[in-house]
Image (tube, rainbow, N blue to C red; front, side, top):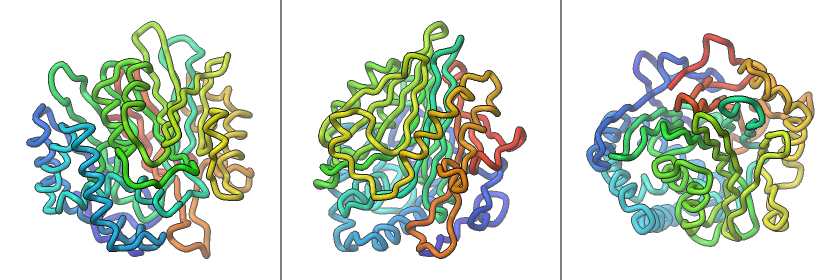
Length: 380
């Protein structure tokens, strides 16, 4: 796979392994409450990057043995599922495709990338690590890594929009063309995102989990509301959506494990810590666990648990220290590509992100925690 040439504003694309600087991380802001107008504007503004992301995912799907002739049916099915479950998001997606000059099925395919990978049982050796602390005074402390294929760094995108009165302003980190991933709304709810794998995954294409994340960010103000939204979607791929809330006095959090076998809610421990990597914590869903042999998820979870008190420190740099562990430590929380592996097995921590639910802001470093410095953070 070769990365499509996508020059961001202000210069050529960074090479693999060189994080995009804060000055060039692409951002889209919209105050338009109409989903079609908002989507069309996004498609026109970031069309070159959305088209490149679609190309990159077609190549990834082919590399992991998704038949090319299946991609259009998968995309069309995803489009149908989105239209049924969230028609306003489907309208935005259709307008984005129009603005970007893509057929709708192809943009729906991009949003359903987790579901399409699940159809061939493509599971990840490594992926994201999330840590939350609700046990101290004030707002929750949260941080996570976003680990994905090194070639996909160009697709990193920040968005800010208001879905319409009385909806809250939503700020997200996502991939170009995908409706959402990690985000926060100004009703005091934030959302972290980790992939999971279950033996019942991959039975067709259901509501894409990235679309579920977007709807939670637009409509939920409490953990209970987020759980209800997650339970209302028929999914065919597994994900954990870690939701944190703060109303100015009380903090709350839960990891919502979403999978075709059901939805489970995992709460913080007695000291207020809520940790998640890429295996199920709910005992019933864990019976269907489908992580590959030798996956790092359990070692990463053990590392987070052993060093969890760093997250209680008021200094956010200590939260970063929690995630700065490499292969030599036996828990590659901060992920770097390894020589000699094919691209579909090459992973890098492409983002480190913390959610400030009190101010409804994202704090992001476009790279792994080991490279995060006080002057490398973006505030959205």
